[in-house]
Length: 251
Image: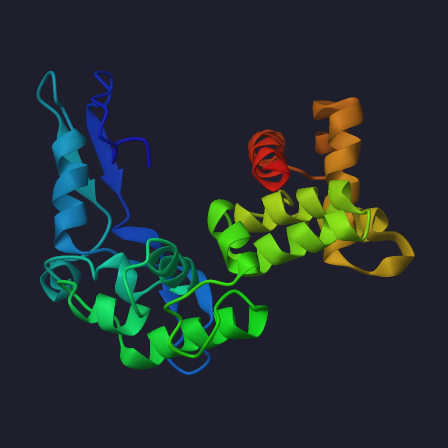
């Protein structure tokens, strides 16, 4: 939302607020993260209200009832409590701050013990830490800590170099680390799905479709993106992220 930024946009006078935001949350049972649209906290509403008429009188239109406003939380839950902890645990170990479980217990809003245990167990399965405490990194873990992606994507990126398929793996890691470039316009869902299947070919793989989409956009630009229902803006960001990952992997 353009109005909910730290930058004062002088032309924003009227803010039309749906009361919702896209937030990362972790499923309590599966511990898998997802980006969900939900009602925000009141603090976010006040932030949006403050964008209206910063340089002249403005108005804040709320598209929800006063009952809904009264039921909203005062503040958002800290992101550490609703996000995967693998990258955080990896960083704690890389800074030699001790076992992640003990270190995070001293934070202002400590995450659940089960979430930390799940994160450390995943790092252990990836071969990034030496034992179940997660306090010490392996040589692979030190390499993963230098990459600005989730450890699972980081290991895939390193293995891509070993198996001589670094370029397509770079594309997949960059896209999965950001968001999907595939669009699904209202009323054209069947056409968009058909375009995605065409990019995947006989493989039926979303990852192959991602690589084909990026390669096609790199060759033809916006025309290719329009024909195949792709976001050129997303692909442009993926290209920048891809370059950053390539630099980190070479180091």
